[in-house]
Image 1 (cartoon, rainbow, N blue to C red):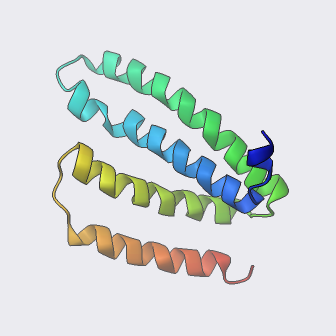
Image 2: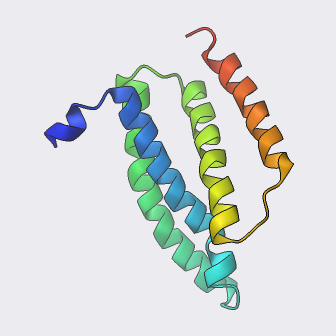
Amino acid sequence: MNALQSIPLSLQTVLLLVGSNIFMTFAWYGHLKNLATAPWYIAAGVSWGIALFEYALQVPANRIGFQQAGFSVAQLKIMQEVITLAVFVPFAMLYLKEPFKLDYLWAAFCMVGAVYFIFRGA
């Protein structure tokens, strides 16, 4: 536990959000590959089970970020969206075998703008 406490609070927030997003991405999209022929309610139940682990990381991430690291709710939300895109693109390409699209790059540029506007006053 001491090793975790030695990590800066802002980095703890980001690392927990990355872990949360990995679980979230599998919960939301993993069933498209693994449970494609299963009834929707089976896929929903499995996804819900995976989402439990997402929340186990996301809730502490937001609490640490807001209460201790000093991030605003808007900053946490934009960080979440940037991390979501950073996790989703490799997932789509490597796990779901989707081709790379330039739209991913344009979306990333838009996210850079969002980060700028949310963090510029900080």
